[in-house]
Length: 427
Ligand SMILES: [Zn+2]
Figure (cartoon, helix red, strand yellow):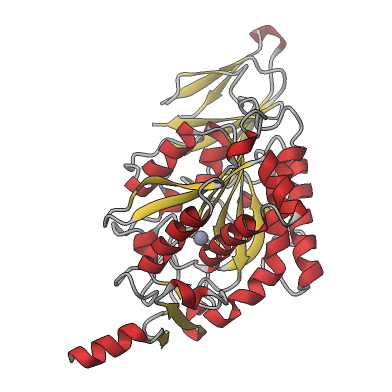
């Protein structure tokens, strides 16, 4: 490339169309239903300066993203700071904007966390989070709702959890953005799973996130995705029939408030998932996954996290970003407010331990497995949720039930009784 042309390119915003050959529709082996990558129709304009982000109708290059974060801290030094969670495989920064006024240290304020774009090509949330940071910071002191919210809540916003997937080719383009990190790992299948043991090493982007959760006491959080429009509440690794989340009713109410608010600004969203009830679905009822962040956070960190799928296209045309902000701004702010409506039992104490009064041995098992503490029949399901057998309790058994596993293939099974669920492994 000639130098003059190179400079001209640097000075002009980068615009390109993803051609079908560059964004092929392919089935994801790890997800059901398959999501078409409709990014083929998107027109992407990149902002190569912070000033070009003024109308929020472009995607920032990686350097512009870093500069935006730094400028907010420079402009609002008493209101926010940047947390560096860690680095990606290729050394890019994983950052979160921590919003906390210094004048309110004497009050107890719960911690809230937003995170987006763990899937690198699902970039709508990336810009929504940047714009949310900007809106909250500029609204503090002038907008009563934002001022009151920030005074009562410590808010951390991580706009980009997988920078290597987003800037796959280089720092200046979303062309070629992919779901995976630089090791071709789906980060949302790579968290420790509370219900099955996984052998995969935790990728460093996820380890950074885990360390961040360890260092904080987030009570409510959300992870933003694209490719569908639905509020996906836990669990992801069970259907609601197998094991409903203990606060499923609370989740449904919160999620419906989000969808209803968004529809009051644009009615035409959150209706592309047939399994959902009016834009709201229990994760496993849509499709079961393991190793997702949502279940990890809910189970291990005393934090209620929902998965927000906010745009049917994973990569939307940059000119449409303001439209998405129009119908997402208010529900995104209101969702932070929900942290102040948690019943006292929510998020303060560890989730009820589904294994609490269960004694299951041996586990893993080979021939048979005994369950002590049962007060009713025990049901055994395979990993797909199919009921394999039901074993009634015998009066003489001192509440110990023994199941014969000899006819079953090796694998993971679920035991249910009395509303409790436990995972057992047949070797
Ligand atoms: Zn996703």
